[in-house]
Length: 425
Image (cartoon, rainbow, N blue to C red; front, side):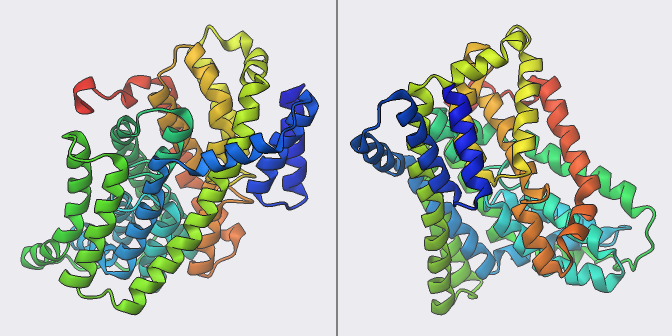
């Protein structure tokens, strides 16, 4: 009964247009009333506890690092460097977008920021070269959602906090699946671009390629610093976020000299606004999470899925289907905060590795950002690329199918997400 009341109130409030954070709060309060345990102090204590978490300090710093990279020229140099090596191929600008998306994912962790940077630079170039604007925007969107999967990832940070799972393990486990998503886009783009006749860029000489590689060197060092620091225990994920922000600020201001005081102020302003939204969600979602635990909602949901308890792959597939459908109507962060406390006890009881589940869960949440009607990344790319949301949705379809195939493969072959124990010690 508690599970039904929680979901009914949550969906009703979302349909009425209430912000997700407050919908989560009132859903938790509704369960309190249903159980006869309403206490305003419990509400306040859990809300404060939801935001008072040291690990969440990484969120604003990773967001700030992404803003510094876009404003400081790091993102642009990554795109130019990718273009120097693959831009001359048939459909070359599409391959540039994919490889740049993978590299940017290892710098930022924000799908929206990466998509905005890619679309602003590459969509006008692809339109001028004769590419289909719908398909170009769809590729940017599909490439942008690799960001929450390859570390550093804000999604892994939130999942790790809510699920009490090692964030370092999540980061390292996400590398191969993220690269697989990029590989699936390469295959999908190769199939799509074979039927198009567009202008091909001339092959750049090796001297120019090396020069662009040298200009992008400072940008390429950031993922090396983050992954190396995490692997060898030099800093924690939270400290890695601070290092990333400080490094991006230094490179953008002192090396590339594109970060002005006005640009730095704007980066801080955007980061503050975005962080406020994320932390308010995390804070009020903790009230719902507390009541989900007290009311044994996971046990009730587990009862609904009890027939699959002896078949971990079937159970995982059922949960992934639920998350994918939820992704069509909910944004990334609310899905993480709503479903993590519900599914994790079921996952642990079934003997499924929480790190493995976290990786495929975040991939699935990322796919929700390119599925209409809510798809926030689709909205971003349609706005920047000057196409309608419907056109962007049609353009992303082959790439969505390709990335879905990666998710299916990971469900069928969990070993692809396994991280050797020595990697995080």
